[in-house]
Image (cartoon, rainbow, N blue to C red; front, side):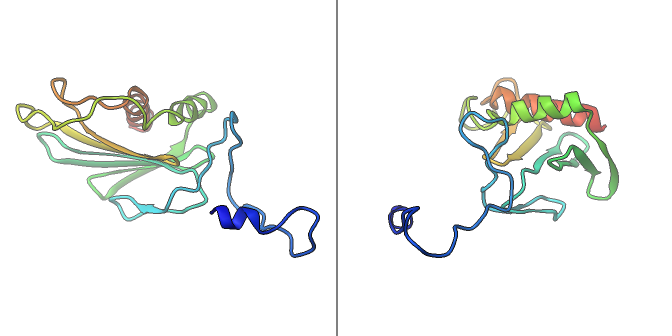
Length: 161
């Protein structure tokens, strides 16, 4: 990376620098930098390297659920239950603003460790945001997720349910 930055100056001739194709975030801005590697969600939806898509999955529980909510940068969402029943909609501007604010700290904080074995039939969550992902099991006596991650999951499952 350092070699790429030292090769040219603004006064040297040469081709112009490439223009970013996705959203970028300057320090302190509210737009996240979306250069995380692409991933695939459990329902097979791929997230690219230049988007700021948010994906949350919830699986397990006594009924063996498998739910996924995918939110596009503009607030459009798609929810899939048990891999086949699909709903879609649009987040309200207030919910989208809240989601974006929570995404900034969704992968920081919380406690790490092994889930408590006494929590049978608990839900397991995976949240993927442009800056990374976090997984946790919904068990009060085990490790706890980052507060923003848990709030995002709750917001998305309530608003899309």
